[in-house]
Length: 122
Image (cartoon, rainbow, N blue to C red; front, side, top):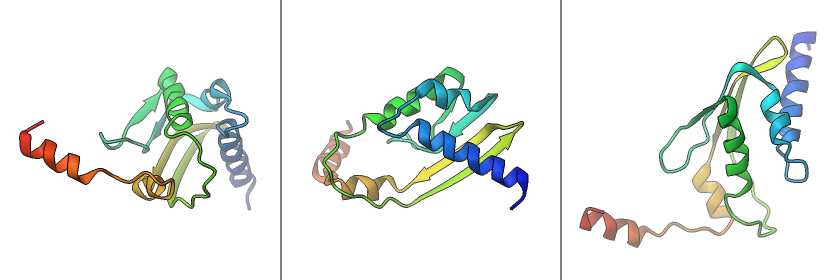
């Protein structure tokens, strides 16, 4: 492992730690990004979303309030791609298996309502 790789790994570990439930250090998370840094990937029904600057606080808040904890253990497939510059995060692309995550938490989609809304043009 090179020194640069070790530095990036430490940066990624710090970023993950700042958004853990018992820590939730929004400003600490934001401070790890370069001035033009971007967090991209996690999206709701609108698909992929990007956050920059002050918007970074919204992704942390959003993740913290998706669904109230049930105590269920979940195993969520994810792919994270981190790009660093000068010891800070330049780009963080985070892609998670959203449907698998909510299914494991016991949240089932309401297909009937979706079909009905589609049929009425809503």
